[in-house]
Amino acid sequence: MKNLFMAAMLCLSLPSLSIAGEKSLQPGDKMPKIGDQMQNAGSGKRMAYHEAMGKNGLLVMFSCNTCPFVIKNQSTTRQTAAYASSKSVGVVIINSNEARRDGDDAFDAMKEYAEKQGYQFPYLVDAGSKLADAFGANHTPEIFLFDKEGKLVYKGAMNDNPGNPGEAKEVYINNAIDAMIAGKPVTPAETKSIGCSIKRKA
Image 1 (cartoon, rainbow, N blue to C red):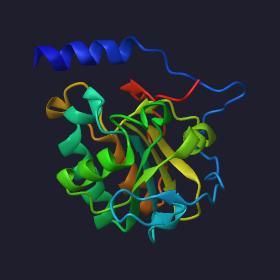
Image 2: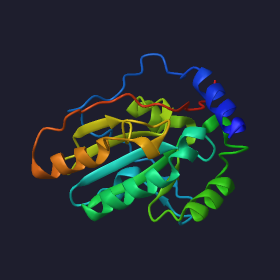
Image 3: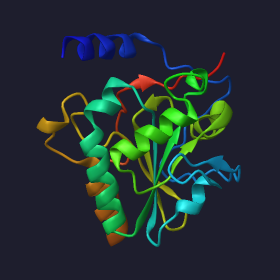
């Protein structure tokens, strides 16, 4: 527990690197049209992230293997993915930690992680952090929910207590999915994502 706490503090102390001129997607923006084929650690095949789109939309999560906030939210991630799938919303998880591609976030390590977590959805390698740059994503975990027309309706955290998900009182992403499918405004449409910085190459 102490080691996890120390790792979390180090994680929070690291700056979120951003690219000059980078603009984070905002609610109402369209899904970035990046058709790059990415390696899927689950199947070993290649695919574009938007191919995971479901009948009612797509949930994109930026994540990784080792961030303390990802680890403590593992069950929350599985619950979120299951809820989205039950509502015909596609799910895809993106690993943009390019600076750690030779270590903790190497493809083989991702394959092991996906199998251990029982992922039933794509876990893709974002080579060069291109997709993270297009989204303006800076943390793990960080989520983006798009409707069936490809419009962003929610971005941020899965719930109101990423540091201690067992004590969360409001599950933002489930509420956002329900409102989106019902054709109602998503409130809040944006929350603060809390986690480790995406490790881009300098």
